[in-house]
Image (cartoon, rainbow, N blue to C red; front, side):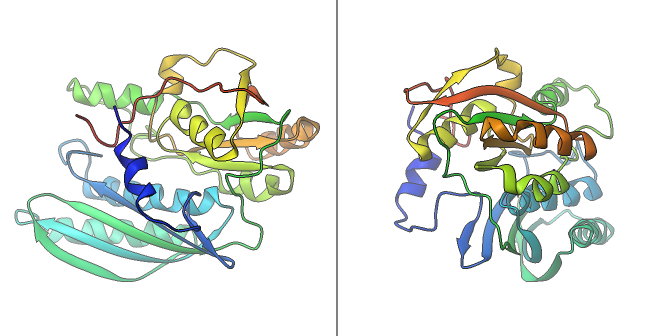
Length: 275
């Protein structure tokens, strides 16, 4: 099946496309949309949780670029049955989460719609951006955190079960301190939003290179989307420094492959659009 998202992106002829955010000078621009019945159900999450996750998944792009979030533009489509108290809860959550990362909401738009949609544009600044390009043969690939729980908890919600209040499906963990402190030791990186399998393929594609696995990557780990952990590539000589920073920042770090000149790709099904 054709990857519709990749096809749409290919229709826009811009040299700024390719990373987690568009880097122009030292300013990064990124946008993501959080859509009811696609990314969440209102029966699963309260307005505070919805607002917080919507902001976190957008801030993740800035964090992945080693950029400091400065401003946010928020566009809301609000269902007609939404209550004023729910609007207040949602907006308070968006503002609070943004402030935690030094980000100010400076405007946006609102419309009436059948479902709740939150679209956020983040404007951030980086003097030492982390890009997707730059991998070299022999580099090591690794990911932060523990992968698989987001998909597991999503499946539980679909089954009508409850999940823990601190589940990463509700509240992704952004690795801002780890990326800031480890940037000088990294060659390339991106956040894991579409699953380790798919995002590793994107990283390999943009660098026109392959991979030799150093350990098995189970399907429940590799295909779990919306993790918002970091996928990073680096010179193996820098592994001791990165492991030290990982310990100091309480960031689990797992190496899983070595960059090679081959055509290796994970089997990965596009999930943004389904036929």
